[in-house]
Each structure stands twice: as C-alpha cells, then as structure tokens.
Length: 500
Image (tube, rainbow, N blue to C red; front, side):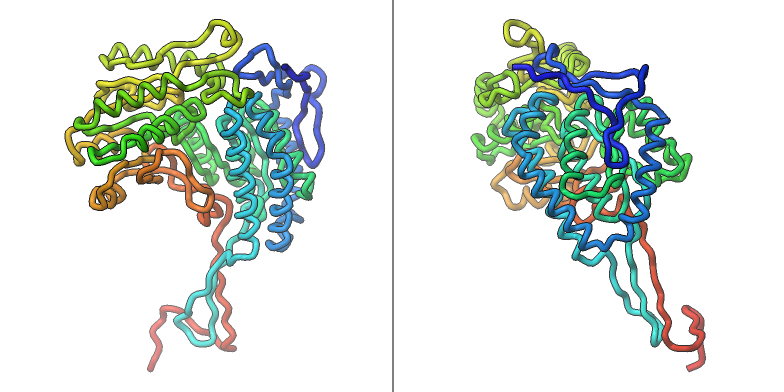
C-alpha cells in the first residue's frame, strides 16, 4: 500500500530548511511502482551548498576540538539509534531504492557496524612515536582533521556508503556536507535526523539534495570544501578528479567494477552456484562488487551451467517490500533501458542467451522497472558484456582451458575491485591471491560481502588509491603532522656531521 508523499527540505545546521518559493523540485519514486512517490525534494544550487558549507565551517570549530573519545561516544550512541531504527530504515529502503528486505537490513547493519568500529577508533592511537637520531629529542606523528569535507554518495547502498564516508570524517574531527543520490534522498534525510537524535551536534553533518550537475558541481567547486569523497561512475569520477585537481583539493574516488568468479575443475559446484547466484543477482546486480563474469574451466562448464540456469529461473522477482521477493526492481527506467541495451549487445556479439534477457512489464510488473535475471554463455573476454560495467542482473560465463588462462581473463578488464576463486587447491588459492589485480580477493566465496574492519577499494579504473572502511579510512579525511620536541636546552641540527 502506498504511503503518503512527504515534502522535504535540506538539512543544514541542525534544522530542516524548506525549499524557497519557486525553487525547482524533484521526486523520489518507488522503483517497483512509479506511481508511488516517496518524497519531493529541493533541486538545490550553489546558494544552498554555500549555506551548508557555512554551517559546517561553524560546527567544525567546536567539533574538531572535542576530544576523540567524546566523539567516539557520540558515534556509539548513533549505533544504538540506528539499531533501534533498523527495521524502519530497511522498510523505507525497500520502498525507495528497491533493495529486498533481507539485503536492506544488511545495508543498515553495515552502518551500525561502522559506527561501532569508528567509535572504538576514538580511543586508539591516531599517530605514532619514532626514535630521534638526536639525544633529548622526541619525535611523533599526529593526524589533523581537514575541515569541511564533501561526500557524494550513490543510491545502491543509501545508508551504508554515507556511513562509511561520514563516520570516518566525523570521527577524525571534520564536518560534512553530504550530497546524496537523487534516487534515494529520503533515506539521507532520515539518516541525518537519526544521527542528530543520537547527539551529533548541529552542523557536523549537513544534507543538501539536488542533481549532480547542479548541487554536486557546486560542492566540488566551493573553496572552503577541503576534500571530496565520491562514489559513482568512472565518467563522473574523472570529472571530479579534474575539478579537484585544478584546485589542488584532496579527492577520493570509488568507481566501477567488472568482478569475476574463477571456477577451477576441483571446485564444489553446489557452493559455486550459491555464490554466483548471490553475487550476480543480489541487489539485482546493482553493486560495484556484483559478480558480472563467471570464468569456468571447460571440464565443469556443462554441469555448472545446468545447475546455475535452473536456480536463476527459480528466483522470485517482485516488489522489494514483499518479504518473499528475492530479486527486486532495478533503480529506474533509465537504468533498465541501459541494461537491456547491454543484453542486446551480448546477443549481437554472438554470446548465447541461456535464460532471462527480458524486461517484465505485465501484471504486477507494469508500473515498475523489472528485468529478469540473465545469463549468457559462450562469452569471450573481449566482448563488451565482458569488459564494461552493466550494473544489472546480467552474468557472462567465459570458458577457459586452465588456471593461467583463468587468471589472465580475470585481470583483463579496466577495473580491479573484486575477484574470487573457487577451488580445493591450496596452490591455486595462493597463486590467485598473488596474481589477481584487485583490491578485494575472495576464496570459495562470491565477489560481494566486504566487512567494515578491512580496507575497501580497488585498483586500475576502480579508484585513485584511497581505501574506505578499516583503519585506512582516516587517510581520506586527515593530514599527517610530524612533531619534534627538543628538550636538550641547546641547538641540535639533524643530519649535520658533528665532531666525535
């Protein structure tokens, strides 16, 4: 049953700021039922971004001097509030983003876990001591917050990814302006409300809604924004890099993936099917870590395909708000059309369509953006469907003759986010760990399922070297400061020869 449409404003300096009269707005709709409008939001511009940056700058003055353990206490209370709101957020996510309920709960759980992890960092060392080469001299490092940071987040993990970015930035002592994706603004609105209800001071996290080319662009260019953390497409990532590079502004990029599972002939095929179905069709394939390629030794190709296709055809497709649904809608019709265009490309390139390949438009599907789980076989590594990110429920199966060819094919795309191998061989396992060109490596598990205490990110066109989550998350949001304390009472000169 549709819920009443909400009209929301930006969240700046601890309060909701309604859109001025005459300002353009945009709507967020349910991907499974486009007639269900979740909310109406301001199409913000440079003026609203400037207001948010001003509020964040003011909040930074106090927040940055708040002791780190006290900041950690706030994050721990945030974890408690998110736990209390887990089910309501999951229900909203299923409605606004189209993620099935079991996955939506997992999305919120990532934020809970991240809040707890970052709370603990409040009582850990944010620097180190080092031996000095001189007597009566102390040498150490500390981390200093940057100031106001801008976070631009995608729609596919609408609570988890804002938490990865903002919790690390906040724990480090920064203030944040968050520009969420246009497809999931209501979740961002609830996110900041929950954080402030847990005691986060006003202005430490501000949310400004709008389009990327307007509000996002203004955030990139604002001179008082010291860093940008962006997750999205390679194309937009290049633009972020260009704009920030011209200003010598720090930026971190988390971009695309073309992830693969390698299946050797000694693999447990039932386990492979479980992993491939979850990796390829979880979140309707709309994960940067989704399993897009299945690279299989020919000896086990036929039996694996038989089991894989049978399982894919049994997947229950429907509205994400239905607890029985296993594959929900894709985010919108633009994305649906893009996925269908890639399915057409796969056919034109000569791949064999084993199952799926169609939009679902009849009956209960008529008002939403639904695509069948799709599997291609006879795919070559140089086909576009094997090289380009599709971001939908499409799996390409590539046959190989041996282990070396499998590794070469796995590494053959422009991306390097997540790669997996299924095998019983210890030798092959450690060879794959060494030879896979990716930031994430899984053994006997699919390409999705990262845990927040480990660094997250990839190589090649997947990013620019920064890692989110884990202990490395502060690298995005702090500057190193080296400190020397000389208590000798006399001038001492480092690296200068002295008489014995």
